[in-house]
Amino acid sequence: QLAKSLAQCPSVVLAADIMRDGATWEEPAAAFRSQAASLGHVHADPDPVSRRIPLEKAVAGRRYWALSLEAFRLSRQAGPVLETPDDLEVGLTRVPAARTTARSIYVRYAPVAVPQISLAQLAAKPELAMRFSNRVVFVGFTDQSAARDRLMTPMGSLMTGVEIHAHLFETLDQGVFRT
Image 1: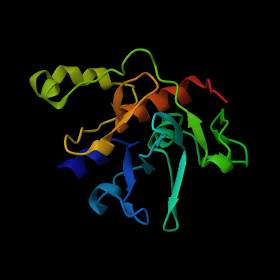
Image 2 (image 1 turned 45 degrees about the vertical axis):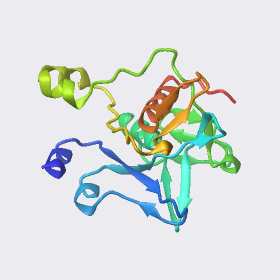
Image 3 (image 1 turned 180 degrees about the vertical axis):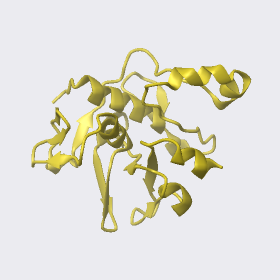
Image 4 (image 1 turned 30 degrees about the vertical axis):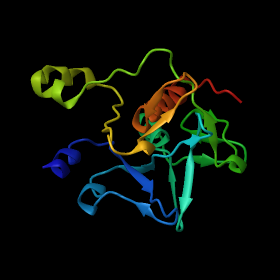
């Protein structure tokens, strides 16, 4: 049922994660992957605070752009990401992300939380789904048992990876980059 639902969404980006061994990717099952427009990695750079996200990650001969960058590219109906040593171009947007830094860019965390709707809220009020119309939507879950699911932000709060990627999407969408 989930694969059939994904097939009805033309611009789905699914997550790829580097396994704990650091040498292989965990990718979506083939039934889901075949329905996705793209895959994107879900990593951030904690230092120990998550200020930057590498827009590319490569392991085992496979490279993926960040989940948020792929969502941005598809939302702009842009072709492939164009690369130079110093930046990336996505449609009409130039992103200052150098090859030497794994194309990392700073995330501009919004002072206001990213709007969220839980599955329980959707089940109770299906009309809330209308809030998703004409929007880029990040869907995720919080793994209560995994400490690596949350990172500290410069705002002094713990944030899930999917929410961090939503903030990075907003950074890309606004086109205001800190260099």
